[in-house]
Image (cartoon, rainbow, N blue to C red; front, side, top):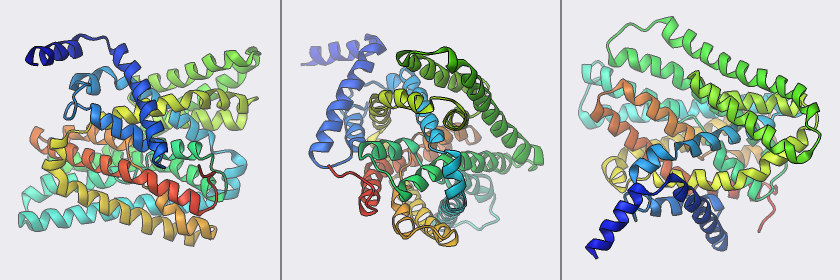
Length: 420
């Protein structure tokens, strides 16, 4: 038995990543079908399969593979997801629903940010017996609470989009939901850019400057949007030279990958860049229906690999070490988003179905939150950063296991999903 275990360990370490890419595709498909058999969304099946494959469970996927070798899968998936979300923002729809989308997004994102920050700040003060002016609070716990609050405002577009496509949902709630999710991530990135600048200054006891908190984040966002917009306009010219529908696949996937890769190379947001690309394509490029159709045919296996890989990041020791903090993050985020979305819907005079059910559909949290927290860990020392990252990862797993059922509930209750 020991010899078999040793051989398996050696095989995992030496096998080509393409082996595991194939396993991701096949096992995610099996997990999705099994989830459907039990009347659960496929996303849930993908996550559970990933958790079982993780280094802390069955261990078929080793840690280097999950955190390094297969990160390209995450970059590809997020780029395609962002493109699809941007494509949902047709100008006619934005003009018709713009007020409602804007108010709801501002209210629910701000609600999650404020409630999570306030809840964590209060918990840190009470648990550690600190005063608001204690050095440990000002240089560690307050910056951490602000950072976690900022990333809590994000809503994962992948899970939402996957479930909308799975149940072929259409209607007022779905239209507003797609718009909110599209704007929400841009707003979350903006919140995090400002919050990380403030947190860095607090943690290092440095002065907070306008250039660090405002100018740099705004320039990054504008650069992302300009990159996606420029490639969208270039695609408008190029597409007339691609007469065959079969050739559209290579052109579109190539454009999405190129925009995402350039954004990563320039250290700006690939999500915002590809969202802008999708927005330009859907509004200003001829045959845009055909372009989005070829991308949609490619989406499902990408969703499967992305969520299975996300599940494989789970370390059960993380849940044990940071479970209490993860629970606070989850509860605060749920409360902030639900209250905020309801208030935004009331203020903007949104339809009754939106007021009643939208809050259940904006709870998913995944790739963007993970990316942001990993980006923010450099602000703290190794041990402090590990606590923050572990708590957020545990909260993300809790969200991704529960929220697909809430999204499906909202779409079905609103009468916009084709039940299966």
